[in-house]
Image (cartoon, rainbow, N blue to C red):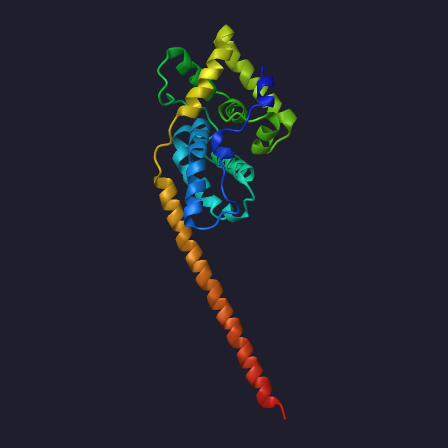
Length: 231
């Protein structure tokens, strides 16, 4: 049932073109804006009400890694992997929520069944169908082998297929569509995070400047002492 994920393309956010390496506040905000919807919906799908805390933590943590990203694929993989890691710390129990915008009873039941799956089965299912990732990329994001990722995905599919019967493939497609269509709750996280990063970078530059001035002063003093001791 999961062979369709082998060749699925990456979603638009992870393929969006940027100038790497990322430099400057504007470029940072553009990258965060592109990654924010993915981080928000993935964390919401994995830990429900804990999603906002996870999103804030992932975006904040990314500020120490942004300048090391060599391209959009590496950046997208980083955000997915760390969203999963932070979600694991917040919540491992079942998630009971009505997914935003879902009104059909059969699709609501599918989402509810998905929310009751074990955590790693939810991860594998969301990454494979919600984020349209192939098996290898899913395994990298989950930090496990492709065999383990396939095992979790197959178990999730079997559990959901028992509920859905012959409607499984149609409900799975509608699930993925509703998941990807869900908007993030706003962009306040992005604005606040980028401002904090700008302040942090300013003070880091000031600290480096002070260190250089101290080193230069020490060299000048050493030179004067040397000259004063020379015959």
